[in-house]
Length: 196
Image (cartoon, rainbow, N blue to C red):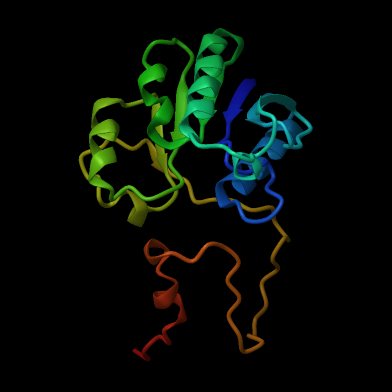
């Protein structure tokens, strides 16, 4: 298949430091290349892939000195992707609702994986009004605020097997690698479970 992967431009793919969505996009892109698909990654110019990189900004926007409008590069990127839609069998977009209005004007199927919060009232109307071929949540809890939106599936973020091997016993600590924010509920994960 000819697959367009459309990443946010805030971090490189894979990210140099933090960048959960960009890391998942990298894992998925490289796995698709391993399976023999022709993958075009639309991302920042400092990204790395064994697929074809289409740089949509010279480097990750977080690293761009003097950047005052981070949406403009995303709008330009999405315009470029959808102008080239006929070159792809599927477009997999990871930029939230930004590409939804464009998806309805092309015959190439669009899959939109939503990586962030869905409980923001301003965005809710976008998910109701613009339904792509497939809207994907990363957990059932994530999609709970939008019960009327027709999600195609819940597909949890995948990581390569063996990256974090399971250990039967704990070393007595909890490690959290990522951005801690209220919606991630790290506090719930740290609370001891009550015996049943």
